[in-house]
Amino acid sequence: MLNQIRPALVMIVLLTILTGIVYPFAMTGITQGLLPGQANGSLITRADGTVIGSSLIGQNFTSEKYFHGRISATSGTDPNDPTQSVAQPYNAANSAGSNLGPTSQALSDRVKGDVDALAAQGIKNPPADMVTSSASGLDPDISPANAELQVARVAAARGLPPDQVRDAVQAATSGRLLGIIGEPRVNVLRLNMALDGLKTP
Image (cartoon, rainbow, N blue to C red; front, side, top):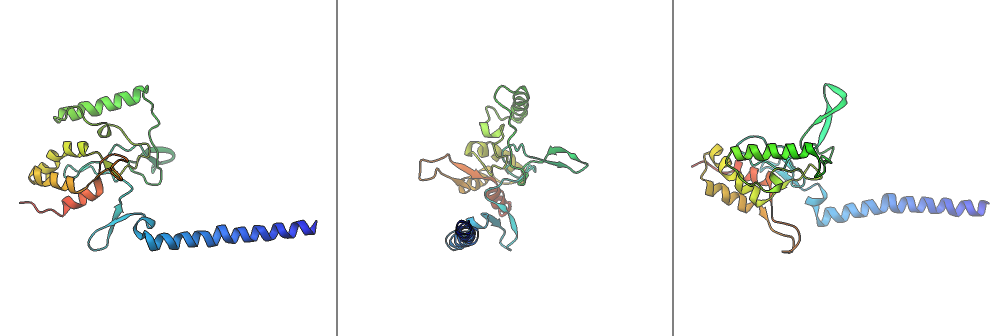
């Protein structure tokens, strides 16, 4: 019996050291050396070093002078009643979608209301990402078509020529990975930071 227990204990200790200490430290060291930005969360900072956010997690911009991201269905604990949940857009601690399917009347009503509100602003036939939330609720990007439809509003709010704002959108647009994977996208946080750096004429 002792002959069986001793090798088992030795294997447990060795595997614990290997998978619990050696491997994590080795991977951390390799990623910090090769991809430090990604390993540390793809953080975006101001020129003074202040961390503004991550390029991987969206933020809830509501001001007219900023481009708005996708609708976020994340929630969090109600500060007035810990037993209840309330909507908290872009809550990075609680990634989630609405879980409403295409036959959901609540989803249909909400999308129709958003489409009607956009139509009242002169925006007809908005792209899907302008009226639907992502599965994670934390999508940091919008489509170029979505961004284009916001140019006039942002330009007017900032007193900038629309073409100047459009140039900022173009600069913040990433193409398909390797030219074939995914879709072109605009990182909302990077775009809004770039706009804050522009001077009004």
